[in-house]
Amino acid sequence: MTVIPPPPSEDDDFQLVERTVAGDQRAYELLVIKYQRRIERLIGRLVRDADLTQDIAQETFIRAYRALHQFRGDAQFYTWLYRIAVNTAKKALVDMRRNPLVFENALRGNEDEEETSRAGHEPISDETPETVLAAREIAQAVNAALEALSDELRQAVSLREIEGLSYEEIALAMDCPIGTVRSRIFRAREAISAKVRPLLEYQSGKRW
Image (cartoon, rainbow, N blue to C red; front, side, top):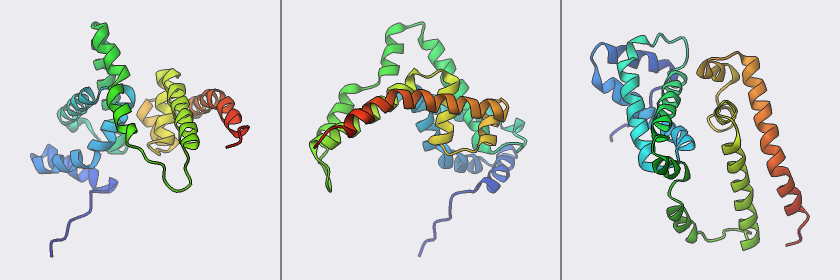
């Protein structure tokens, strides 16, 4: 029976980096496999175009590979990689602003494809069309509130609530004091709550 080895842990990351710098290409492939989906999800929240997301993710790993000799293990590898991904995405967005049509499409994403995928949704358990619609409206409100935040607030709260990073890791990733991280997350939560709370109160007042 073939035994599939577990993915490398954080403790293994630095060893894989050292092996890569020493010329072991397979070691870097393992790092890419471990973090590719997380990096793509991260970039996907900044850029709504799926093809562009994959291109930026690929560029992120290329840049990380070229700078790998600079990684000293002071922070977790994913934290270090996150910063490269964000900077790469920002550069791509700046470049796209020179072409407004491309920029608009990248931010809007493939809405037709999303609608098609939703069309096949069937209510499960005790879901009703009304509750499904309400949940969708709330999710859209949260997403809209996230997109309305400044880059710093959106990145901070996404790293905390979606990626599950600690305040210390976020501070390293965003290159700012922990106090600033806490302030940004608090302000982001307040802004999102202000947008979503009226909708929740409205939904709770309905009788289904």
